[in-house]
Length: 572
Image (tube, rainbow, N blue to C red; front, side):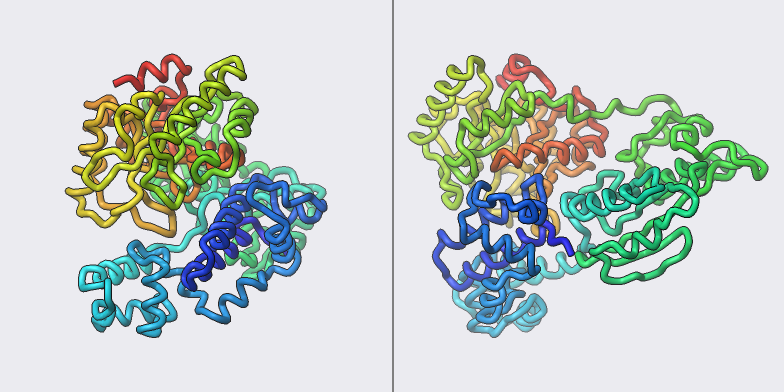
């Protein structure tokens, strides 16, 4: 049974959480967190690297001790150090750290003084008014804790896109390797490139007699066969994800792909168009008087119904059908349109790689530019740069660009927006930068009005260029802070500022709906990875997916421009 990178990273993160609650050495805690980041963002499976006998200590931040723990996890599925920590302190306490306002010391106090061992215990204590009795808490903190717990309980638990890919890709490879199989496609929200995925819907075409179903239920990650028939089977994998596989005839493949890809509202709307034309559309094809007139491909179905082909990312019934009927669909941005990345980190703050290493990775990606935007001084946990250290980095970038023979690296900084709306570094050092990526990293609990005004005041600074991860959300972990996004976008357009589509699969912030709003308001966005290692630069495609779902075209994206045009746009 394969142990996925996400499972290894989750184990390291949970161990770091428990050690932090216990008050363990901060360097030890950070080592596990860095290991989790490295593993989660690595493009290759740890299980495959272990099977190949690769030297794991060559990975950023992975020493021999951590390498051995990865090997143990891959080979046994368990992490003994985590089991020991859970014997000392309830593992469920790690979930409490996901609640804004609850740091390790507060979680420890709740556990020791109120005997809280789970989120359920925490909710009961809040409802009984016990939390407010502890030093340093109070009624407002208690109310916020209960609000966050209830909000989390309402969120449908779905897998992040990157985790779903990690599960789907080896399964698709396994199915494609079966002799007689012709096509294998994962449909549903996965194919629509949604930021989270529930179940996996897989469509397969194969030659007659191909043992697709038998081989499918024999896959080594299957822990339960929910149902099995000649053309359909449903299983549950050890990750908890359910997978439905359908064997479809080649003549119906396009119709099935359309049926199982689009959101329900999109499919209903398309079927109504078919009915209005005296036709019938289902998963087997498009029919007229009982005769199939289309179905081999999605293109011929849309064409026969009088529409342009609609990309999977747009199939939500958000206006794409009307646009397809009038030939007004957007020419969606693609990865190849991106000329460079405007948000990345090095070892100077909390990144894993040196300046030179990041530069060569940018060259390998074919980029015209890469912005080095290490954290500013307020983010002490990330070893943020003060004015003196930033000045040293500016000089180092100039020297490296000279050595490379071209101005590849852009001088930037991820500058904290302080609570009063001022920026974290003096104007004189900010003026030396090519661009400033400004961000909110603390005080997420301000009211909608105060949070909005905080960012608006920051935008008034002529050195403000791009608002990073504009709502601060972490998918399945932290809700977005309250902010009037439309008001901020209008101010950005007026001030010559921009917003980021953060491509990190934990963030994907802006959302697809917010991307659509940005387009309608005329505000360009930057699709940036927020890479903390060379591997993190590969996250770009997730940001492009998000932008495509938001109807964005290349012209709507800041970093599809050449370096000279980009710098002109950044001058306020």
